[in-house]
Length: 116
Image (cartoon, rainbow, N blue to C red; front, side, top):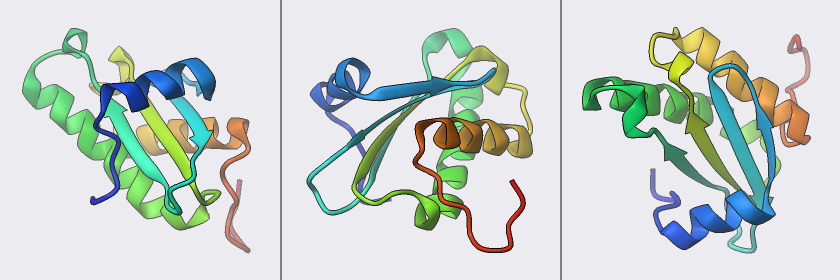
């Protein structure tokens, strides 16, 4: 993924100025940007477990973002913070939590014919 958030100042900007929504296994922060494309940042702290567990959670979140990127409002920076419950969760559960948070923030526009 070429458009990712990597700088600490970008993460801090979203934490303090962005809007947030949370679910049982994720917290999503979002804010409009001026770069012409959306960017994603993922935080999976050491408290979640081993590197293997943290990387699995990050892969699941990246996949949910990739599959639904076209349905997001354009020019939006998103930071997803993984919670402990995401460690053992299935992909479907992580995807549902991610989409629920995006809907709460008003960023997700469903495709025609899709169920809510």
